[in-house]
Length: 136
Image (cartoon, rainbow, N blue to C red; front, top):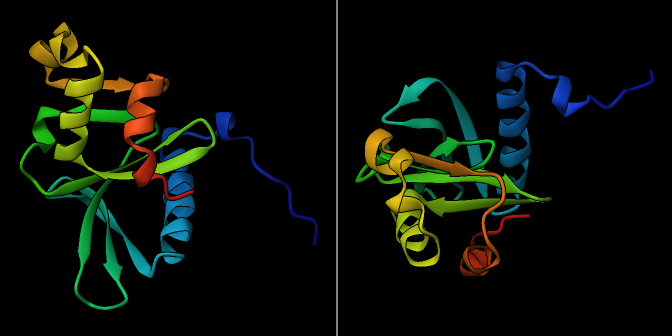
């Protein structure tokens, strides 16, 4: 059997979400997590990551780029997103705090009026602040 790699840019939105879930789930397995994809956004989460020790369960929102949203505030969600060739996992509310320190994003109309900001190219200072949240 010959396997052919997919071209990510040719995937549908649903296919790219499944692709990204599989990538992140595989990475989190290295940290002792078992990931379960949810059929709908339960409490804002796309999937749950249960740690092998039974002491920790993460509610994770999966995005194709760094995203902060007012609708996720206070929900104890973690954001998983790629930047360049790396995947990040960070608590959403911590991410909002870092965004407020290292970017002007929370002063934009996108955040103020729509409660949302996303970027595929965050600045170097923010990426440095997020270095401990790289999972691969």
